Image 1 (cartoon, rainbow, N blue to C red):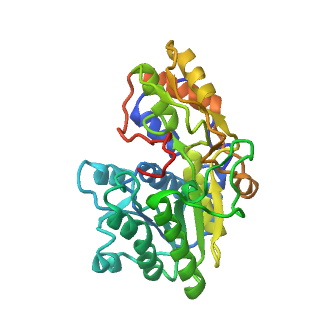
Image 2: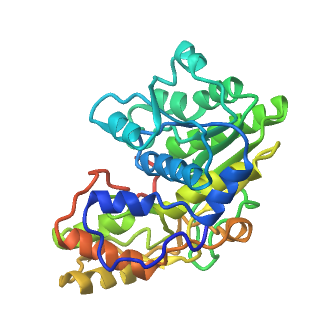
Image 3: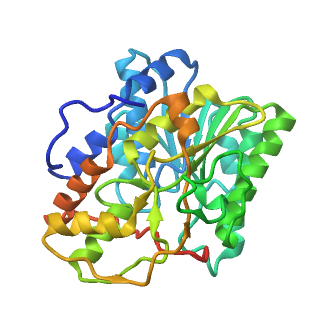
Length: 349
């Protein structure tokens, strides 16, 4: 995962420049694809991370001199994402994954990255949330029973833990708060069931806050500072990881897939104070943050030391991410318009 980016820029020019940075394959990714046989399919490629993960995978295969298929699957209901992916050599298939016949028609490949799921809008739409986050996992595991699967999960499956604990570890008890988190734990349990019963090798990636300039907790904070919106301190602390590093872990984790599944917390090595990070952002933006509430003694935090031991430390640190985010947002850079709701403590999204 480390050393994926050389000669880092002081500023990220535009979305094209950002997309290039987010899809640089690390040496570990290149080595992984060199040693894994078969083609690749990314289910739910249309989300926030999927497009750059698909590009990273294709770039790694190209650098390794391998002619393998990278297939991105999504509904592709609007926009030009399909054509953009195709321009980078990625095949696309439009598919409603909950349609059993459509899922069954997908090509059988040896390597599956599972990114499908539902978070925002889950409150008030609980039935579809459970279908997307839990039932679909079983459909997928049975369809791809002869593949290896790296499946995204979330740190929300853990309870809130002490801010002095260093974050929840994979060996700690889970304790999801709210139906979204419960359904994500359901996804893990269903993958585990089929991994054990069908001997499907799986990794489960409990991600806490991938960030890039258009999306993530840093972008949310920076925009609130600029727009003079109060920042709620109730959650108080958080983890984050550069999205390219999270992409790299997902790809590299395919070589660690096992039955029963290997669980990995996926985030950076540090626990950050929301107040302190906002003050750093505010200084760079020339605006004083406005705070509301007080820090709680617990928060949603992951300890990813196991992941770092297996796959290496993230390549981009917090100071660089803060600099890039302040510069991007301060210049009026684009946003995906999808707030993280990092301050939410009741599990309702």
